[in-house]
Amino acid sequence: MSGTDQDELELFRQMLEQSARAVVFTGAGISTESGIPDFRGPQGLWTKGGKSTNFDEWLASDEVRQRAWARRFTGDRVMEGAEPNKGHLAVAKLVVDGKVSAIITQNIDNLHQDSGVPAEKVIELHGNSSYAKCLTCQTRYEMADLEEQFKRIAHIDPCSRCGGIVKTATISFGQAMPLDEMERAQEHTLACDLFIVLGSSLVVYPAAGFPELAKRTGAKLVIVNDQETPLDPVADLVINRKIGPTMSFVVGIN
Ligand code: NAD
Image (cartoon, rainbow, N blue to C red; front, side, top):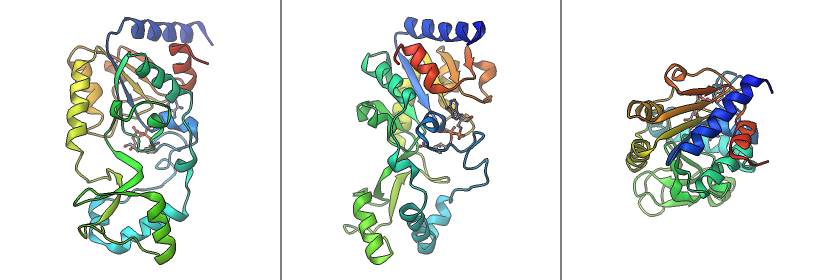
């Protein structure tokens, strides 16, 4: 590690020490060290040409929906076997120690909860892919039950309670953001003195508006990402390094 690298990590450590109330904001980059590809990093799904289904297309066609379920149950299931890495564990320690009031995440992989963070401290802006919900009455469906149904009849039926469409509990492109989560994320952002971004390209809005808001309202902004982001010029500290080793050092865990 060069002297400069060491200096920036030490500066980050001091900023954390001086903070009375910090917020951690995570993107897909924190989970690549758990083996889950991101979208826009060098090995990202989109960098390699993949694409996501838009919510309107998905709503309009049962065929599109059933194809999406087939991909879910027969395709690449890397998210399901993934475990929290050092980055998640370091963040969990900050929450447990009372340093971080909340984690605002764009991730849908449940790894913050799996690392021991109480669910009420994780604000999921883009939902969660480990279960499903009826879009009309919000009844929750477990993935194991849906998979069993899909294997039996090659179809996911409408909601057994109200007939609504059952969807993985994620927020797709074109789908409205969850109001309660947006409000809670705003409250925590306004109340923090340090806002830490870990592994986000910061190009997806409205999520990327939170670090901007934090900076505008007087918090210090730290960005840890291995590529440049559009908010680097306004950040107080930018660390272009891997999240796991960086956070382990700064939080003091191995
Ligand atoms: P993104 O793919 O746009 O950006 C991730 C950023 O993290 C990139 O700039 C990349 O260079 C950086 N990065 C990757 N691994 C890193 C590491 N180990 N250390 C430091 N930096 C690293 O991700 P985004 O900004 O979160 O936006 C993508 C959207 O995709 C989100 O809305 C999210 O819902 C969804 N998504 C989620 C997951 C997940 O839940 N794990 C995975 C893929 C996509």
